[in-house]
Length: 247
Image 1 (cartoon, rainbow, N blue to C red):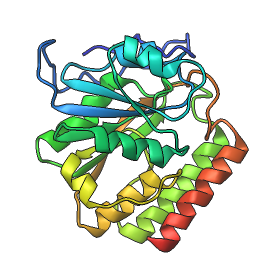
Image 2 (image 1 turned 90 degrees about the vertical axis):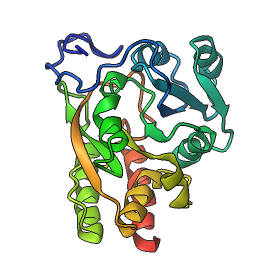
Image 3 (image 1 turned 45 degrees about the horizontal axis):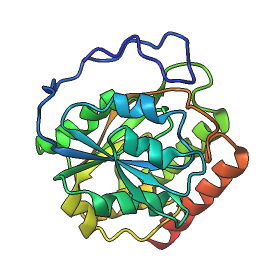
Image 4 (image 1 turned 180 degrees about the horizontal axis):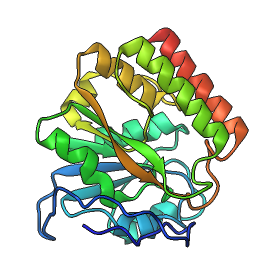
């Protein structure tokens, strides 16, 4: 799988070469992984994202109230679309998890900031039984891909998470994978920005093997609802801090 020359819709500059995938899949491979893609007004990014899903990975686009036709576009492009009118990142993620049927479920942002061709880096260790929860550690592929205020907030939260759980993580990466039944058994309750953090906290409490691997982080298409604004970042930090305080 060669992704060295691909760029997101928001970035025309060259992207550093990526590792070749350890898992090449034929076009007719059965679906072994469901990929949950929370979506809020991502029509600009959807064609790029869905076109890059590896064989054997099924897209579950969870529309969280888009007004730009994202849901219809995703259907036209062959994705399973789940409507979740209750706003919130966690609400969208959990709706996708409930709709999933594959043994392993991945989560990935739908804004072209993460290349779906790299999903095997997080899915394969779970499929092989080498990890219970695999996270993609974001590595900026170009200047401006990760705003300084968002990177700082992530670093602080990752440090607090390490102190709380002992998990040796450097990023709360949105690209991640785990087994569906095990995720459901965690009984996650947060439906806002704290959902990804709650997943790690509860997984650590259940003695899961939690690992991370590098993935490229690209300039997203359009404006971020969270990291693109200081207000959005503050809201996410508040939600995640509440999870650390109460879970």
